[in-house]
Length: 241
Image 1 (tube, rainbow, N blue to C red):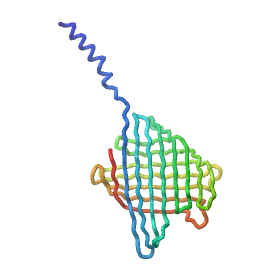
Image 2 (image 1 turned 90 degrees about the vertical axis):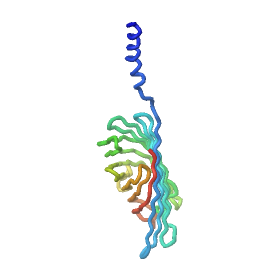
Image 3 (image 1 turned 60 degrees about the vertical axis):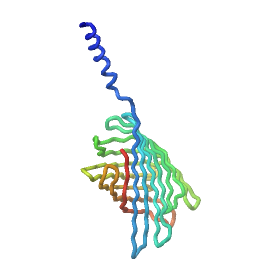
Image 4 (image 1 turned 30 degrees about the vertical axis):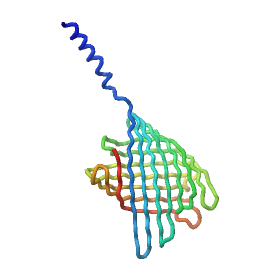
């Protein structure tokens, strides 16, 4: 009777590693926000913004965030802001290293842009990251950008896109901040700066109250259009895990 027990022992020794291997899985995460602002008195202003983020995670090294936002704003009952932004940033990571790609599309009534298309790629480095999603990372992408303006003109440039990303959470509070600096590689006097910060207070695992701060500066715009724009809005967000 000892022989069958020996065979059983061999089976357990060689079978366990096969069961311990985890197959690659695909995870999809969604987060959506709706924020708004209303002011009256010296300036009558209404602004509504909705943002949607879908992240696809495959296995241990691949991800593909897809982001879209739409803003609609009036001042003195006249349409001033109608902004649309969509971008996808697939990436590969291993340890602290990141490799990013980017594809984006943008429209902006405020800056007189009927269409802007971006394609690019570049490296990144995560100085800190943990299992809670907290992160400090820096990346630099090289992009090709074509912009079409409302007056019929257009321009195509190559840019460097330097991005600093900060993600922090403590208890029910979380902060997500991303800052972009995009100079024209043929002339650094032509540049853009974008900054987005979101402070969230989580009431349930899926619902949060959010405060969003956005800032955009563009050195070259159509005549009569503002170079910069700042928005501060408060709203609610829904997310899945």
